[in-house]
Amino acid sequence: MNVLEGRRYDTGEPVRVMIRGDRIAAVEPATPSSLVTDWPWIAPALFDLQINGYGGVWFSDDRLTPELAATAVKAYLQHGVTRICPTLVTNSCAALDWGFRAIAAACDQDPLVNHMVPGCHLEGPYISAEDGARGAHPKEHVRPADWDEFRLLQDSAGGRIRLVTIAPEVENAVPFIERATQAGVAIAIGHTAATPDQIRAAVDAGATLSTHLGNGSAAMIHRHRNHIFEQLADPRLTASLIADGHHLPASLLKIFLKVKSPRMTVLTCDAAGWAGCPPGVYSSVLGQSEILPSGKLVVAGQTELLAGSADTTDVCVTQIQRLAGVTLKEAIDMTSRNPARLLGFETNRLRRGSLADVFVFRQPADSRHLDVLTTVAQGQVVYQKT
Image (cartoon, rainbow, N blue to C red; front, top):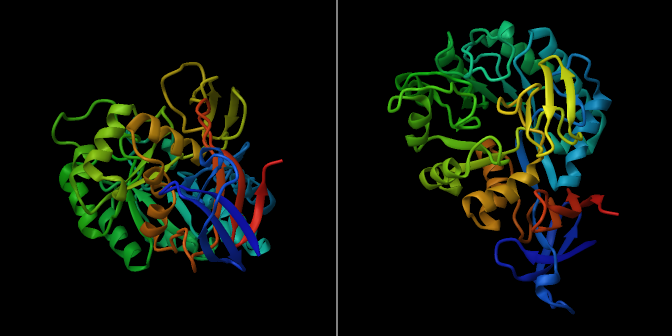
């Protein structure tokens, strides 16, 4: 039996969490021998539904191997993350097919990776070709929604694609959304320049999420009739937000949370393959990117145009508290319970019978990262700070 001690992330109560097998056997009050405030926090492990890679490994790379995929996935354990959706972005069908096959093989070969990858995320290629809305996705691979192509990719992934980001204005978008949702695949709206009518049509067809709302958008949009306000106003859409402090200013984070509420918000770091790398200039199929000393990832040669994120999920937990004033409980739930619920997976809770995916951490005032001490997945200690 594994035993963990810490302050509950939701109440601050000092507790002892006892784990038997892959389940929490008991959560009991504990009496610290020192000040309660000296104890670390304990919380359900994090779940990020939009991760593009880590440490120079990109899930969209046509050179991806099962071994590299496994290494990139398991790197997130040190950040308190036990479940991710490896995300493949706009690319050729052959490259996407290769990436999904490599990830599927990694899952088949390693039980821990299989647990950590409950589903994959296909972000594109069925998105807007317009500059701004397209973001850093390569224009030459943007194309109309194609259900036959998606079925091929789903077969390559072993049925693991559980989330697709699509722009509602692309050709065949609405029938694609209808067929995908009927097949149990969640649909997100993103990288779009859609009209309000097109947004409503996508939601009517079954879309339930806004991918990184406020990003993947043109710099100039109509002051009233635009795709951001339409998604923000629709109560059927959960909003995913990149809360790294670079993608959205504090004012917008506060507005989005005020409208959607923490219950209808999911936090994602949208980590690029350069996450975990030191500041510097890096090259990939998407071009040259630079990690600035601040941690901001930009198109190399300037400081404003973002090229994704170099941060990890735990940064979103710290930054959303600092920038938007939410509680630790709200920050953790938006980065754990909400994504699991959205995609129909088991949610983790600090209570008897829950899946034993938990982590113990401190929250240094001078760091953007959580100081993760222990991560447990399926009842097993999979990361221990040395």
